[in-house]
Length: 77
Image 1 (cartoon, rainbow, N blue to C red):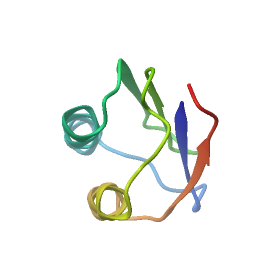
Image 2 (cartoon, rainbow, N blue to C red; image 1 turned 90 degrees about the vertical axis):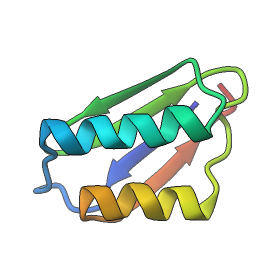
Image 3 (cartoon, helix red, strand yellow; image 1 turned 60 degrees about the vertical axis):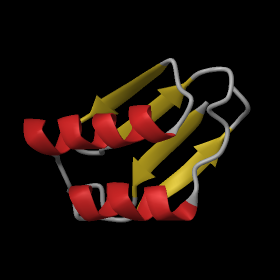
Image 4 (cartoon, rainbow, N blue to C red; image 1 turned 120 degrees about the vertical axis):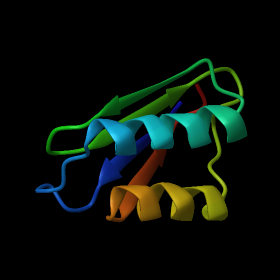
């Protein structure tokens, strides 16, 4: 499992941002699911048997879509 937590607690996402983030993560990470909590504090949870690593370019893409930086928490899901 991978959890991404927005470093800025005031940030929220609109529906379009959430959908784009889900698309990128589900296409690039071998994941079973991707849950995006849009309201402050934004949190993204990626689950699946191989969802234990997020490559820097993909994290940068997610951060660009969201307009904020994320802390990454992993614990072999």
